[in-house]
Length: 236
Image (cartoon, helix red, strand yellow):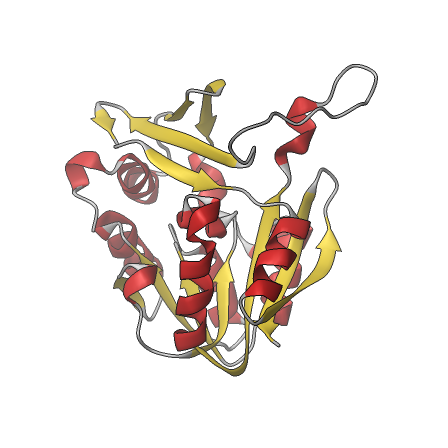
């Protein structure tokens, strides 16, 4: 669980909920210039969500697990649709905020420690990033075997970052060595600095191959406008 002294995103979420505004949630990576996450987007409603997220919510069914739920926007939308959803996050500040916003079942819990079984697992906003590195995908599929019901599904969106290596002529030259969709980030909010953490983006072909190798099937549901996609993963 995250120590509030090292939880910049949780602090930003808590501030925005209490005050209706927040300072900059800064994002650093050794591979890119400094960026920031607009905190207001973590509080978006269903009608302002990207099409891929709205479609994922429509596909969700049964008992639902919202992984890395943040401020609870997806869980609240699912509740409004009449679904039974459990929202988990490792940030106590985020879970406190979700509860205050009306999420009925918000828990401080690490995905890797979940033991209950679910019909639908949601990993939206590139929630599969918690895997960290490509080499940890077997751990993900092993865990899914334990917590997905028969006929259950994992719904996830992610992006293929190959476009970052596109030349002026439109040719994409991928770098050698480590998988190009593995990144490292660190966040800061005001004086609160988080620890560096690995974060995985994954192209659909790589996801599909890994799923097949571990007894699952990945189905491409929709392609987005810029190398992003929504996928459903089920047991074969």
